[in-house]
Length: 119
Length: 463
Image: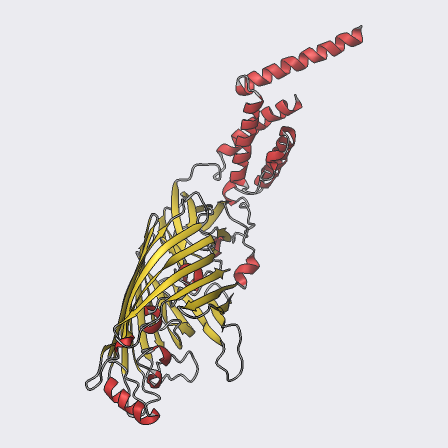
């Protein structure tokens, strides 16, 4: 009984809250990025200012990382066939934002980078 | 009696409330529906916090609901002082710069947290353990490579990378056992995506394997013959240059490096032993090397490289120019892989070089004026995708001739006009671990010197 009452109250509260959360909202664009030694494909991604973007990042070989230094985002991309990482963000200002691999992956690791162009 | 009436009344009231809630919330939900709603709420909560509720599946409904309530209270409390878009992102904990043009909303998926310290001082490595057998001889075990890679970010724009290698497990002074070698050690100055500066001990950007030699990244226990004898691998030189991403999938590297040493060229190994590897090198006539790569389409990489440099700093009176041109490509389509490479090497003044080296050392090295090699390697992933292990059946055909064109007055040695079929399997229980087996059929153009076939087994791993 107590459980049911709590559930009912929670359903109402959570539903109202979830409607206004960008995280719960359907992204405006979903962009797939594939990481492979030593490149992101695509490495240059153009998005619109204010859009809620979701990157779905997977690897074709070893573990990689996806780091946007200016936004403090840093996630590990699981190795091939072990899943994916999802990053959602809102680009507030126009300009170029660099991202890079943050897991050492070999000789070309330092240059495994890309750019998000916000228009 | 009134006491019992009160209890009965309370019981009926509870029943009514229960019925009302059931109707009001979910139109006669059963226990399964309730659980489904809780699961849905947990999934919604995980959009806000991906780490939420991972361990809760086994708990009872009341505990899970309690956890949801608690989390909701936390989220609401966090929401009060700031706007929704600036809410603290989900784990891994990130510190969003105040003036960031990009606001993270959530991070989710099959990831692990990435501690900041690891990106500041990354350490990686690979190892290669082989059993090699030439027909008629016993297996020879060899811990071929033990390699550690270190990097450091001085800042987001200045980065260091290095590779230190121990070959054949043992190094003793003055004996032909193993070697400790610095394979790479360079600084990257990251300026713009299309323009960056690199300086230090560099891998010469030629071919597939030079810059991509981690054992799980190629088939076969040993590296391709063409990428050993026509294009030296691993080929590192001291130098500096430019690197960059030109957009649309194109990227380049262009370096000035220390030159090859012509006094160590030979008929059998071509220019391979002319690598200085950063020791006793010369920058009097720096070599120029450039590579253009296209990787704009998923699972396809095409590359072309050119190298040119004078090599006579140890052969007074003769200063041969070595020029190498190569094209390579890798492509994967569904379960099918294909890679291939073509390389041609020109050595100018090869006749004068042979004469000079014969004068110095008493034997004619019979260095060719042109060397040529190519290979192609189809592979097929035999295990279904639902199995997380991978097994690649492959066959590689290689043709490599270090006596392709001879200078006037010199005769090619047919035993160095060679070809090989390398067939085998690469089994990967993990993307970073490769257990390899192959059989090598060697042929040459000589009627006198017969090459021997070989069996190779190996295990290599990257971490």
